Length: 53
Image 1 (cartoon, rainbow, N blue to C red):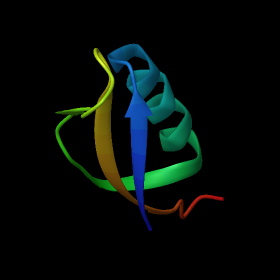
Image 2: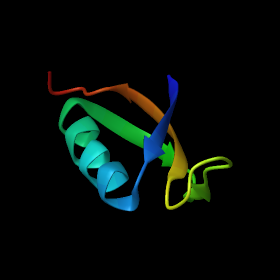
Image 3: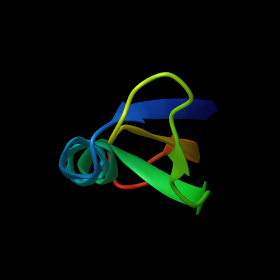
Image 4: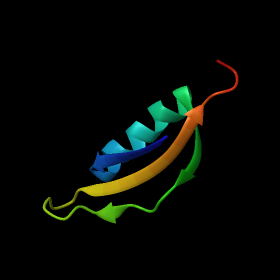
């Protein structure tokens, strides 16, 4: 599954912590600046279900 996260750098980091607890992150893009919001970024992830759950 491919998903997009948007937010401040702190929000992206917190979101990644939570997602990695639930899913296996197979790829992650760099943080791109959001077009219409200052100090906000976009991050694209590819995730899959964790094998241990």
